[in-house]
Length: 564
Ligand code: UDP
Image (cartoon, rainbow, N blue to C red; front, side, top):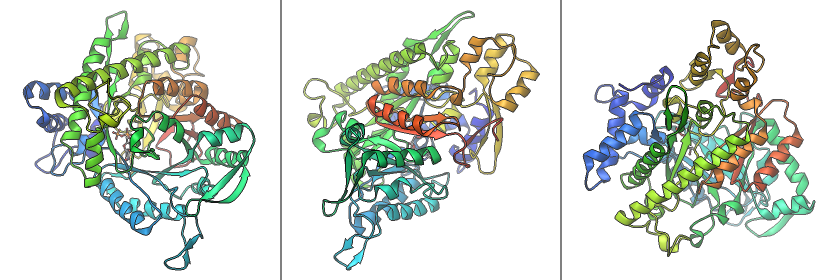
């Protein structure tokens, strides 16, 4: 019998369970996925089926949503992340738009860097007209996305990037200022180290027309930076991606520069490259007796070995929407194993998220996952061969690997609901909240179950507490709760941004791809603070940064109780 929360059951029913040959049960779903993934094995198929099935059924590991939705179906597209090229001509702009539609329809999300497109009102020789510019083309992509629902279940997600030296960067920075614009896009400014140095030294910065390579405008780096911060404070967009940090850590430098990430930023990819993700539920990686809870490192290692093999198999039994995607994906074989339930693990271990002990443990846990992932990929390389572009990688000649990358921290926006745990490495957003938008027109009230269990074990649970939590979403103002329990249950907005960033940094240190994290901020956060957060992100060698100031967008998926 699988234990699933009622939210998980509703979500599975609405979006994941097949309804063609009678209605699938969650158990059938995990069997369907395991059956498909095990087709890659040459021996011990029953054993591997059993392992793949059990890690999912026990909610210890889940692959990204497209794998759960599409495995075993004809033309089942299993990956979540793609990057597509955008060149300065109508042919690639509209070919990529068509390809994005095909990917969205099959459950994937797409990222693009629009920096090669000539600026708005620039000259077009073939028609003697003037050009629309990158932001206009993004609006076309956005509208197309609106009409192509992913496999009829969720809207496509896009990442749009424009580099900091593009002539149209100012228009791009404010392109989501109107909250109705570009709703199917996350936007990020592509930041270089040169720009950050110009900012530090308070120098001028030049914007360049990519068609002519001529300077179109010069302004102070600070002015440009301030306009980014102002918009981010207002709406959460734009985020930043740090292109030089990404490329310094690119294991395949010989193949060229990476210019974009997938929609939520956790996977930097070459044009046409795709990546499939999966996450280990850390809340399940514990050893527990009546008095003591600790991390079960052996179980974690076993789960990593199964998960890496699972994700490598996904590449081999995947359906690729385009030959170009197939070619580069099979050549680099990138996978992204990450985590969910980090905040709940910390609660079980009695460690407050906002503490140095938690940050140290974050490093220890991710270092372990990284090392064991690489060991597992190495063992696969011995049996199945290295990824085909391995000789061109920084791993050659000494370190064999089956996959050019192994780890990503994805947001786990849906799979953490299925696993009934906290998102990725995020702190609890609230102890109680209304969740809208999982299912259309459906609002649900939830109180975190780990919180209820903990309060019960301490003899602190009562009906009165339930009402207070529903009203406030927090225990910080509730009387008679010891201070260390209050610290343990600090929620996202009650945790200083400094700890948010320290956690992101600790996980990034041992994540070869990137870490998707939203630095959730109280409504009162200032311009100066956002500027400091973005600068600190660069100083910490993060690959990207996203913030969200509470209340700055009205269509928020999660709403804090007591704030609406
Ligand atoms: N994604 C998408 N549409 C969505 C949610 C996610 O295309 O509505 C893609 C996107 O590339 C994102 C990746 O899936 O970066 C992983 O997101 P998440 O971990 O939230 O997905 P889950 O597997 O939980 O559905």
